[in-house]
Length: 197
View 1 (cartoon, rainbow, N blue to C red):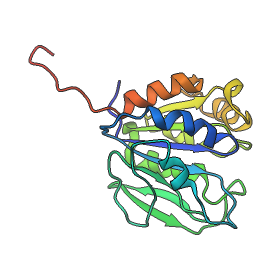
View 2 (cartoon, rainbow, N blue to C red; view 1 turned 135 degrees about the horizontal axis):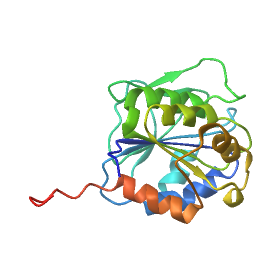
View 3 (cartoon, rainbow, N blue to C red; view 1 turned 90 degrees about the vertical axis):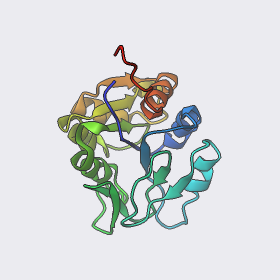
């Protein structure tokens, strides 16, 4: 499996339930950072970090502008800001216009992360009710990264994974248990190579 340094995850309706399966599978020791965009109402404070923190041993926090990504941390986009990853592995926040009626938008995170990480990125599209993330996942694939989508028949809302599958032709389309297992393998530290390797 190729080296992965960062994982970006996007979703909307039903994605919180999906993350409740994926995050508990993460290994205690990790070599990747995870950044998440979930569409949440912009008019209320987000409790997403607290909700997700109860499902994983990893620290979970809202990303700050110019903050460097650290392995073993789950970052979520703050409400009403697009979340981008810059070359060099730092976050940027943007108040640009909504995309797909959403700010934060999944495409913005995925496209910037693909530019920053190239083949060292994995992108995951979960359950959701619009097409946000399809172009972003295609950008991850063009950059040589690993592309994953939740199986539509396993999703609360099929629209988002179906759009991503049609646009990006992901490397893997998986139900949540298999997606959790693959994510755990991506996140786990690599075993040291032996002299015989």
